Image 1 (cartoon, rainbow, N blue to C red):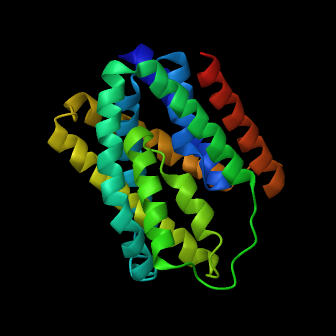
Image 2 (image 1 turned 90 degrees about the vertical axis):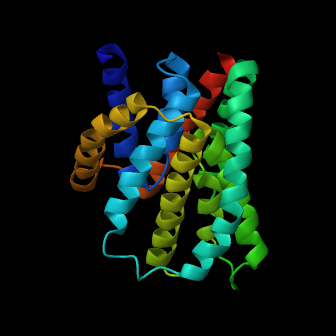
Length: 245
């Protein structure tokens, strides 16, 4: 088990540091890098990312549950639940029958997500319609069900809203918390949750906490834009590596 968990923790440490200083990319870096080197199956990695995200979101949101916009979270979660279910069904089917296509799809998703993240669209003058949040929730749920990385559609939509940045951040974290809990629950009902996965996830938690602290107190000597470009480059390399493999 050491030959698996140690490199997994090393990848998770890098991904946690990048997410702490940029605000995104943990799931994409972990899923992509772990899949490229073939450490564990995509389904296993997805569960670990969900467990880590669950604890991370809950830790950050502690004491903030009354300060976010409940209506936006509810509208988004309406789409999250069916998207998650469809994504998990596809993951179960493709893992057993179309593993190479699943890896190709993962690579394309990471590249597209990297492109979305590097774009900086102008904020809207008015809040988007309710259906936009629900539709974005479906897309996020689908990606979360398949790969435990449902962030890009939501990040792109929420950061265009004419809202305070703190509200946007807390709304996103709350949706990710709900998504992680729902995904773990659904996987459990499917019979895809094992004690090995839970133990693996718990063992990874000290790494996440430690490198969150490192990223917060010792950010790299780069501007925000250059850090985004560096993360974007890393995601493109991972995505192309998956496609080539």
